[in-house]
Image: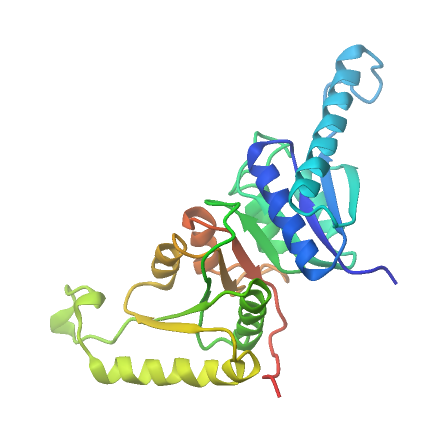
Length: 295
């Protein structure tokens, strides 16, 4: 049985180097090996049969990119064990296949330069975040940020306890606080249909939502008593408030809620919007549908 590992995709761009550095810090924090994967699609015209210097140059560029990624990792996490891997594959399927093998966390950048050699959001990153069998971090915005709280979106979905477990553990391992965000749109009468939800003052509903949030947090506060928690109940949409909080946070954690018709398509609208708008790395917590609360 292989040891669990953290897997990160690279393409030699600055965005992917940020992803490698983030993944290396996380691997060192968790005491896990790091596997750096450079996937590329060997589909150049006649490339499989041409022994000319053009394709040898491409091979050298690939080798240089992988070596550079290793140097990026060791620069921020000198004790982490690094494994280098190159895959002749379309990038997204290659990473998804690699993630099936004892991967605890898959990390990608938010954009790239085409192909994969590309981590373009809406392409490789979005497909990986949507279909991966494990938790995914998309490193975007202030990718190298190491200060600030962990922000987490809290709703009433079946996976909420697992999302909170991930967020509290992330905060505890970084010796930082947690910003727990609960967003809801208060019901309004028909005559108030044109009034923005944020302008509706319903203190009884806010109190109920605060109580529900505290109820969900209670067992985790008990398990992690040294993690300070700031709670916020907002009338804004969850993606909007989390994107706003991301300017001060070092990581945003959200669940993988969605309604795709294919098994494994579990990226909800909140996660999808954050992958475009967050100002720090975003962790999509791919988790079981049910999880016990801490004892």
